[in-house]
Image (tube, rainbow, N blue to C red; front, side):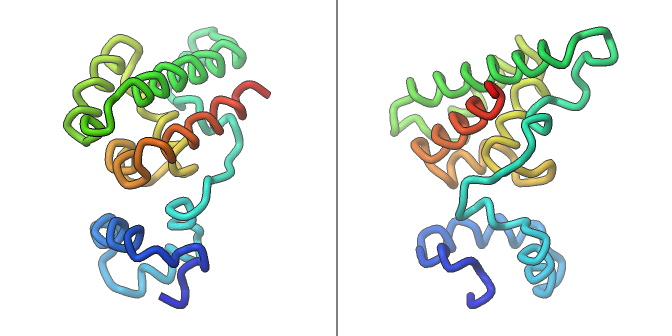
Length: 156
């Protein structure tokens, strides 16, 4: 516990992240590496990352789309996700309901185009737990705050 960030005083947060971290390690010392590499800081702090990271890497830049258009697309998709989150009743903010609604959006707009920027906005990482698990871990309000942060970044 002494190696975790000082913001990690909440036992509730620890209870929520232990199962997620346990899935990602083989031996206990892997946690030390995760801390050193900054792979768990996003559980406690809104992450910082370059805005380019929010754009799905398999996006159509190669197909002639401009950087501005793919950035705008990521911003638009995050805005749609934010609206979905805001419209959901707290009692419906669960993994099953999020998957049901977000997969519909992802089918229309491209899975990576929707789920990738959501993952990055929540974790600031290319590799992290899935965005559904992260959303539930952070809760509705914190998830929306992190999405808004990403939208602001894409607006710069």
